[in-house]
Image (cartoon, rainbow, N blue to C red; front, top):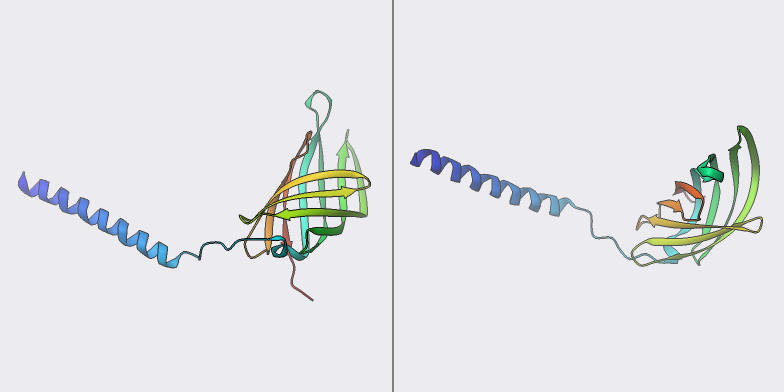
Length: 157
């Protein structure tokens, strides 16, 4: 009985020790804590895609997909052109080279609020920016819209 109890205690000790060693190794190999972000973090030319649906009468969903290029100036302003495809009541509509402008605020924790204007209509987004500024995900926050996507910064030319 003493041998079994000793073996159990020894095994428990080894497990605790190995867990501590694993935590230390992971901590040593972990990337550095994120730096703070600012409007300047979001700068350059990004390609984007957004998919989602608008909610119509009686909860009917009309799917859409947007893709395009957006240029962030690093000062809280943006502009771009996109292609959008929408399907409403089974009818597909494609619009190309649709211009838009935007304003954004990057918070220190790398979250972003953006408002885009296209043809007099505003769209609002919550964004989640990598500290490097290379990529972010977003969700559209307007009532009646269920949508999200990603934007990725391209290499500088």
